[in-house]
Structure formats: C-alpha cells, structure tokens
Amino acid sequence: MIRSFLQKLLKFFSEEVPSEIVACEFDCRQEQCLNEDFDSCPRRLQKAEALKRLSQG
Image 1 (tube, helix red, strand yellow):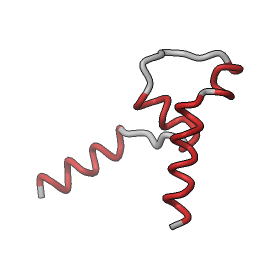
Image 2: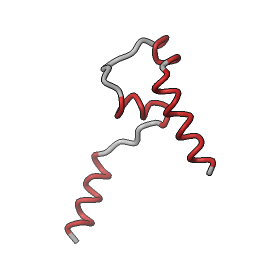
Image 3: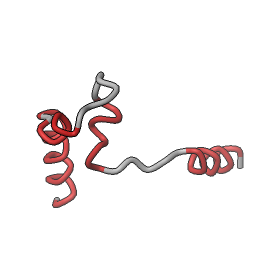
Image 4: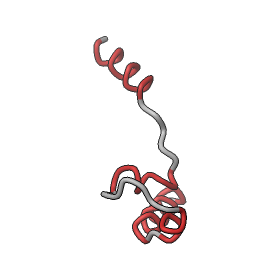
C-alpha cells in the first residue's frame, strides 16, 4: 500500500523527458548549450541513435 502511494506520488512529481534531449538531461555536464552546439552535439546524436535502434527492436 505504501509502495503504491509512493509510486503515484513520484509519477505526479516527475516529468517525462523528450527522447531528443534525454542525453543532455542525464548524461551531460554542460548546463546549457547554444542551438548550434545542440544540433551537432556528438553525445546527443549518439544517444538518440542508440534509443532509436532500441525502439526498433
């Protein structure tokens, strides 16, 4: 019962992170990027490609 309550509470406070910025949000040390840096960021592009392959099976 407590576990169920905690899961609901966590879901209420957590936000879904768009897949295109998940690498930035969790794996990057930089706090902010310029648009040009974001578009060509190798770390972000590599993570996006890996997520794409995983979702395709």
